[in-house]
Image (cartoon, rainbow, N blue to C red; front, side):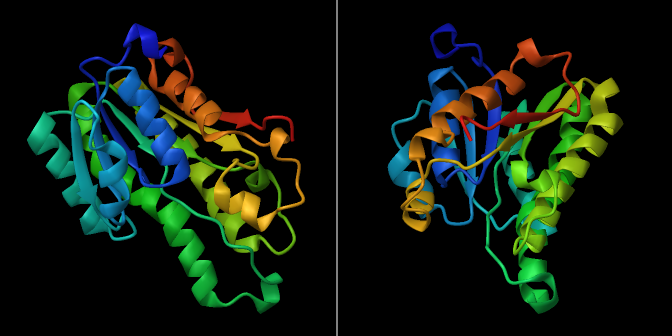
Length: 237
């Protein structure tokens, strides 16, 4: 896909761009010719990685705050005049306590970080996509969101909410030329996950680059008939 430059003249907004997956996704889109608008909570996470990219807009924003998401989208439109693709990668994981011992703060943190940031991002960008009559939104759910897991109630619930939000967005917008789909990774092969699970078989995990390939497919015209799907990306797990 990268050799074909299939995203020439496409503006791709990537949230959570400073993370391991965000970096892989940004590189893949850049190689495929996209114009990048990169958002992260801390812009310092972006500078060293993307300064050599062809066209980049760096955005520092806390997408847990609705007004911040609106400002982010407005700044991209002001600079480029359009948003063709949103890779909504902002999110995180926290291993918790049993549900009855989980603090309200942990619950609120997970819901805001995973579901809330997607809600705010969609609220900000969908009107622009509807106005143009086209767009792609790709979200990140999780395999563990398909069923409740011990000690993960807040995380699995927040990622399950991401899947339901994705489906709702798809139903509401597919007749406006907007495709909305989700990827469901198992364990992503990141340095932090290796540190947390040193005895695991890393070869069975999903690399950020492999997950990025699926995201690029969902952002491309080849996925034009796919709406509201949750694509399993499990590797060998």
